[in-house]
Image (cartoon, rainbow, N blue to C red; front, top):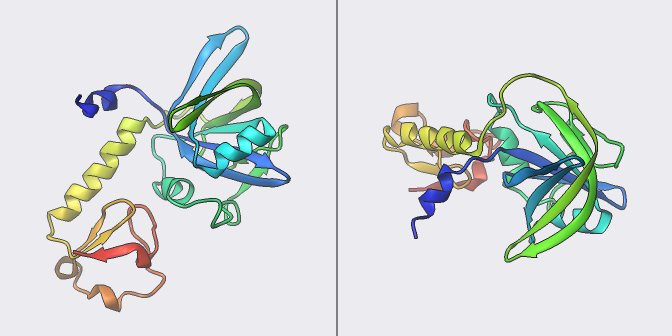
Length: 208
């Protein structure tokens, strides 16, 4: 079976949040769709291993923030490449809590909806949450980013860096730092150096 077939299906890219016992958390997700119109219901699929999934199951509260086409890729790194069990993802993020208590992004968002979970279906590695929205608001009429566009942007960045014959590779997004092209040894970079594509810290780079 050619799994590339499934990449031709249309998905969005979202920051999905929840709250439990006063603590908020969020993650990147793409498998979200409206499944009925009157009343409106939304299906949200989250990996069962993720902390956000745990929060949603316990609180039955959820927020979905819609990401823009001109998205800063560091948002994906921040919410998608680290666990809320290890870091407080909202310690450095400008946000507010909605009527459900779930987190609403104040930047890098076209709008959001938040709601209450009315059904839960576990499917292999993921949980499908059926959500009844209780609030929704648009911030911008810009186009949303699709999951395919995100993958293409990531692939372009990797191809551009590979052309320079890189030496150190970002383990998060695949960006390659080429010492010859940059004119500076990787070891000489400051410790607060970040990947220019996804803003991952210097420590995640691997020598190749």
